[in-house]
Length: 241
Image (tube, rainbow, N blue to C red; front, side, top):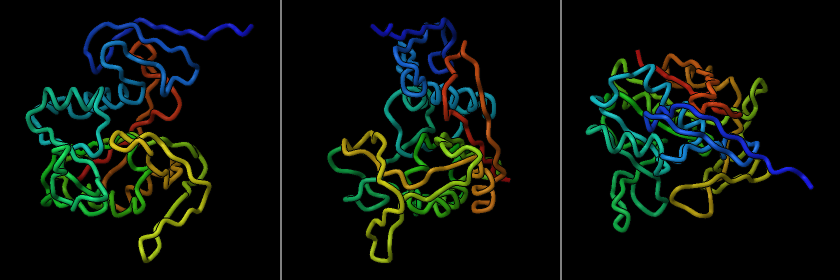
């Protein structure tokens, strides 16, 4: 009989801001090393740690998040930050309009309806691997940031040192063209999941810098006492001059 895997670590959650015991019954910590209070996973705690480090006065800032997951960082920001707003992309709702049933704003990262220089902080959590035109999305986010503003994001850098690779694209008629075998990730508003369009590598730093003009670098954190240990939990910090 194979012994059941079980891991626990006493520590401090940067989202809950208190002592907790992180636990996982699976070796894949990225999805399973949970905080028992806020239900966050390592990448979310890494994101919060980086926000605290790079924008410690974030609660007084104008913040927008695209496609929040409804837990962890998103819940904390929505509860504590008066300037926090968020949006999702709904294919059947015009961008800039509110979904009638859900009461949530519809925005496309590739064509945001926000005015220039509107936000101090723009957040995306595991979103940029699902965008068909990431160059346009990064440019649009840069456009709506104030000077000195930041786009802080997580995205699974599955290709690591290998070049980033496109997995899917749209043709001139808007039809999806699969370049690699279709893969889907969870979607907070669609049980069918989200198609993965990009396998990103570490060269995303250069991609963002070249396409958006934002000064971009990658932050890698391994602090098990903060529940921050797993594959693909790097955080990108993109600063608008």
